[in-house]
Image (cartoon, rainbow, N blue to C red; front, side, top):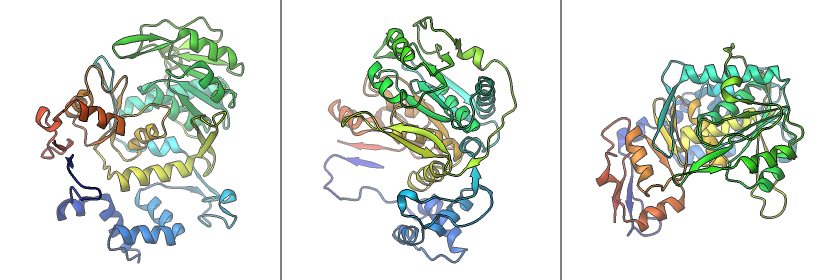
Length: 399
């Protein structure tokens, strides 16, 4: 990708060559549907077909992405108007099962803390942790439809919590720990969570931020919780004394088989909240099947993510884009989790991480790009970001 500060609006900066285009997921999917009688010679034609024939598109996409659906086959969606439309009625699936399906023992997660500490978790270790936490939640009485919430930064425990909750058929929601108590309560009080996973503090800007008093205030307002699980590995702050609490290490200590509840396609998976700028934050419910198919379409078709790629997207757990990191697992890729301030101790931090982890795809927000521009960085000259390596990110920064 070429970044040119002097480019005019709408100017095309980079076009793949024929070999790159043919190796893309768009081309692979186009060839797949062509074998089934769908003529879509380019991206525009593929998009037109997807809009005109949504039932055929989603059926073929699920087959191409190797996402099996259980239950009885039938219509892709019902005839009710959109708000009442049911997708894949009678079909069953489990989001966590499909995301964890890619086998082997390759690296599943790379987690980079603000202090530079890097942790790599294999796919086997990830599945083992999900299984252990899932069994613990079941032992607490968590079942389908119950809510589990997290007050967590972008760390492996947040991914594990989300997948363990989904494996049961329970519902997940998460807030970043920098949210104020009122902001968290206004969201989670609507859910009556049965279990809370929380950090008592977090590292940001080179300092450990003590949030124990704020988290205790949140927990006192959530009287429905039967247990609090403290995640303390990423902070020096001690957790407050809270009845019915235990450590993450205790909650995941006992090995267990990895099992998945097969739930109806539209069964709620997680609740993402609106910003709350126009009143109380509004909960937006995403279902197992819809989230699975849409995320895999986004991550494979739009981001062109392939098995073995490394996917770095700078995101807070409270942002919808954070979920794309989990979706990357389902494509057989390795998400890279970055905790802390992405521009500390310098705006060069993310480029350093991209080079060190051999990231294939990098996603950042406009604010980060502006910070880099103001700092007059030249990432491609300072780091090995060449496209020559199969596990690298290529960016040429043209001032």
